[in-house]
Length: 139
Image (cartoon, rainbow, N blue to C red; front, side, top):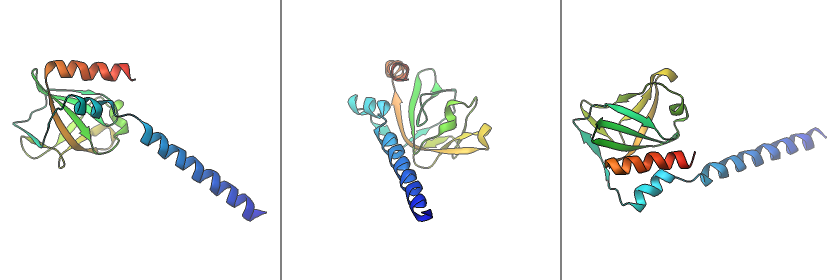
């Protein structure tokens, strides 16, 4: 009887994990789709980078501004769940260059959690507005 109960519990746990993984995979990537649809080329780095402002879009995307006219869509390598709730972010980079694949967004409020940058896409002012609306429409 004990073996049956353990087997039943194990089966239920595996089923729960499998459904959770499917839900994660099924989540649409509105921002990635936008980049692909508009054929916005990624860039490996931003030279002369100094962050002016930032806007969180979801747990994997944010817009970082270098100046009023220079905005970048940042895609993170993995989920950075606390990004939605943080008040401040930091940037871990090398000097004044921000590089995809090497540098990270740092969440000081969450014990310095590092969320590594996967891609960088430069946005026009119009694209920035569209991306921000996209986030509001799909919240």
